[in-house]
Length: 326
Image (cartoon, rainbow, N blue to C red; front, side, top):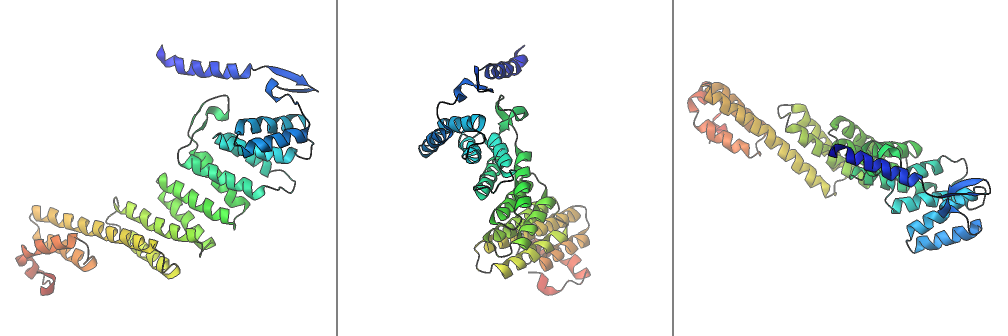
């Protein structure tokens, strides 16, 4: 019985909202709170004053009045934009996003074109960080739905509209980071590369270089025997150093590479231990020596040296050079 309470409560809340009082004003049907009491300009000025005071609901109500009752007024277009701004500050991000998109699709020369895209980008970031949207894309329902797909769509919208703009660089980074968060490593790296190629000297490109090595490091945990990852990380680091030689993030990228080398070295060490336990010392020596040759600075190579000192007979049989042993 309890399982039905929540859907029933949502339905009641929806019906309650829909049953709000309405009035007919010059042929327009609207909720009574949106009945015009002043001229379009007076409502606009009242709304702008409310925005200055951060009284977002008061401002929104006045902007909506203009949109419903004065759609042909000289302030109607701007009022439509500011509706979206108010919704953003009221944390109604999905509603704000739709209004900003509607505003951007108008054929007029828009005064707030770039500002609208900046708000859209901010909304995408909110969604990426976990902000929810209304169920069924309706403001009649609570904000319980995941907005991850909406975030991705907004990034793509911005990249498509202004591909070479500063905001596109931020959108590419946001989209790539979101893909990384979703474990879409291939898609994330592709978008980081697009950012680097399109904005090679932009500060965000350094973030992309660092993120790429972070992804390769994460992949190494499950693919420690994949030498391609290590080579790709080295190549990415070299390009990073070439393009941003004084960037502090270079050291972080180097650290990821060092940790990757340790993962590979530890994998070789563990394989060597396995062969020792199965009484195959010669095979063990091969893995220990390989770790020493490829990853001389990795911590696990010290353990490989220690094991080689216990396998001198196998080492001699394989004619391993003396300097590789303690």
